[in-house]
Amino acid sequence: PHPVPDLLSPEFAEDPYPAYRALREHTPLLWHEATRSYVVSRYEDVERAFKDKAGQYTTENYDWQVEPVHGRTILQLSGREHAVRRALVAPAFRGTDLREKFLPVIERNARELIDSFRHTGTTDLVDSFATRFPVNVIADMLGLDKADHARFHGWYTSVIAFLGNLSGDPEVTAAGERTRAEFAAYLIPVIRERRAAPGDDLLSTLCAAEVDGVRMSDEDIKAFCSLLLAAGGDTTDKAIGSLIANLLAHPEQLAAVRADRSLIDRAFAETLRYSPPVQMIMRQTAEEVTVSGGTIPAGATVTCLIGSANRDGERYRDPDTFDILRDDLGADTAFSAAAGHLAFALGRHFCVGALLARAEVEAGVNQLLDAMPDLRFADGFTPRERGVFTRGYEALPVRFTPVPD
Ligand code: HEM
Image (cartoon, rainbow, N blue to C red; front, side, top):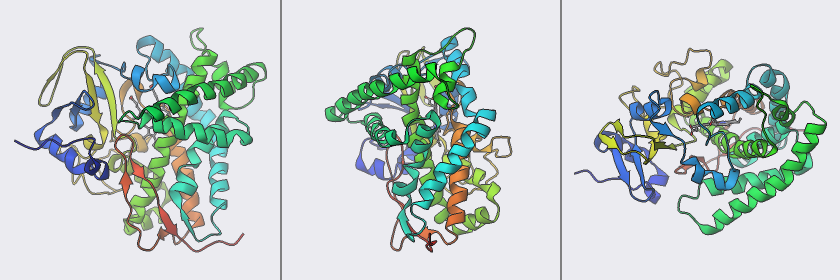
């Protein structure tokens, strides 16, 4: 018998990858009592659950995972209702809207943050850049008043704490519920203003969106914006930190990216495979489902371990090696950052913001590399990732030659 890893232990939070390997090899289907869920860890099983060609899975689990803090979001929707909601929101995050309206917002926000520390010669890139940049971008895309950005950040922190509260700390739960009320009290009046006087911002776009005669209510838009805090903030934040750390830890790959900036896209894709910000996603079974290692009954919660699937040796050669030039990512497609890994999920709920995230990473990393030609880890710093549900660097102290103002 093989010891079954405890997914809520401190060792697991420190480094889940040995436990993931043990699960894939010996217990590809695990009943996990603490989360009352069946855990799947192999690439083929996670991929099949996300694609869900046979309609065996639902996202009912989000009714209790995200409903208390966000309300009813696109994640909970299914069938035609979900398809219409995707069609209502998705165009704002790709194509001309992304290129013409939001790319300048992304570039400007990256520049403003980097200008705030480039003269210092030393900074914690997680604190000064990664945790701020994506949330600033979302607030700015929505067209919120700059004076409100600090409150927006406060709500972001509270929402993230709520979603990461695996042990169910009642104070964190209560704070998340308060945030839901405060966020609504703030945003609903802004939504009403935009309906009356539309601008060029994301909020106005969402107010005006119409598909097959369907439009979003104030509450729908508020819930979507609340979801954006977590879905677009905590994820991209961690991806940027991990990408920079992975490159700094592999100087020859960093040199290649510096010389050929088109490789940022591959570095992003490989970072998403090697260090996925969202380590696990849950689903609910609509019927009995057969996976590696057995069957899962109908009505059960299934934890799909993205972090494990992305390191599956049956899918990737040398899976524990970070290699931006690996040829098994399928990175030659039009949108390579989304190819060849499960970090954005797949199928109906595939990340709406994948192209936005890619544009943020491209702009942010390009500008960081330009501003800091000799970027390196601070002396004596050993990079360390943390987190079970979402995972990334808590700190990333770096040094570089300061650029005078
Ligand atoms: C969905 C990851 C960036 C908005 C998802 C899902 C994953 C994911 C795994 C699927 C959830 C599920 O199937 O249950 C990521 C990662 C990101 C990122 C790793 C950054 C590297 C963003 C950004 C936005 C965003 C920047 C902002 C627009 C969404 C939305 C959904 C989603 C709205 C729900 C889609 C649906 O239910 O149809 N994301 N995401 N994400 N993401 Fe992202």
